[in-house]
Amino acid sequence: MIRFEQVSKKYPNGTFAVKSLDLEIKKGEFFILIGPSGSGKTTTLKMINRLIDLSKGWVWINGKKISDYDINELRWNIGYVLQQIALFPHMTIAENIAVVPELKNWSKEKVAARVDELLKMVGLDPKEYRNRKPSELSGGQQQRVGVIRALAADPEIILMDEPFSALDPFSREKFQADMLEIQRKLKKTIVFVTHDMQEALKLGDRICLMKDGEIVQVGTPHEFLTNPVNDFVREFVGSRKLSINLNELITPVPVGEGFLPDTKTISLSTPVDEVLEHLASFEQITVEENGKAIGNISRQNAMKVMSRYLREGGQIHE
Image (cartoon, rainbow, N blue to C red):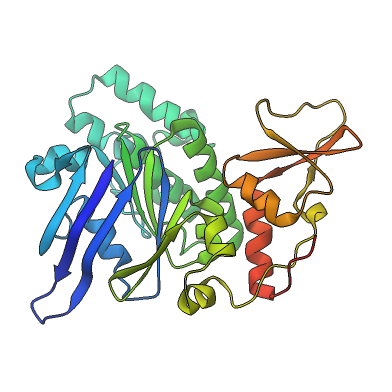
C-alpha cells in the first residue's frame, strides 16, 4: 500500500530528519509512528502526502511513486488530521466536512448524505450540528468534526499527527475508542503519529519506533511488549516486565448474551504469554471454565491493562 524505499530528508543546514528509511505499510493497517522528539516520525508522515519533499529515495502508494501523482489527486485521496483542528471559522460544520467532496464534484445530494452519515458516526445529531459554526462546538466536538472531515471523500489513507494529544485524559480515551470503532467499520489505512506508548499499544496493528531519523524496531504491540530488540526499546516501552493475572484481562459477558462467532476459545488456565500470542491474531478471544464460557478478552482491553502494568513495573505471573 505505502512503501518507503531508501528515503532520506536532509535540511540545508546538513541535519538529517530521516535517514535511508525502508518501510512498508499494509492496506487496511492501523500503523503507528512513535519516538522521542526529533526522531523523524512527523517528517515521515508528511512525506506521504508531499507536505515535506524527499531529499533521496522513493515513496510509493499502490505501486506508483508519489511524485508521479498529480498533487491535488494525491492529497484529495489522503485524509489528514492534525493536533490542532483547523476548521474554517466562517463555514458551517456541514460546509467544513464537504470541502473535499465538493472539490471532487460530488452532487449536492451525495455530499449532504455523506455529511449526515459521518456526523451520526461520531455521535453528533446532523439536525443539531449540521448548520452550526465551529465556535459553537466544544473542543472535543471540533476534534470529532476534524476526524470525519478527513474521512469525507472516502480516502484510502488517513494520516493523523498526534490528533488527541491536546485533549484531557477522559476525552482522549473516548476518542481512541471511537477511532478503533471507525477503523473496525471502514478498514482504512491509517498512519498515526504519537509520542504516547500506551496509545500506540492500544491502537496499533503494528508500531514503528524511531530514533534520530532511523527505525529501531517495527512490530506488533505484542512483539514490543515481549521481545524488545534493545535497551532503547525496552526503556521506551517500559523498563520492567508485566505483572498480570489472567482474570484482570477478562470482561464477563452478561447472562443471556452470546459471544462473537469465529473467535479463539481458551481455558481459564491458559498462560498469559500464550494469551498474548492469540491476541496477535484475534481481536477477541473467549474464555471458558469447566467447558462453560465465562467472558472474553479483547485486544484493546489487554493492551490497556498491559501498558498500565508497564508503567507500574511488575513481573509476569500466570
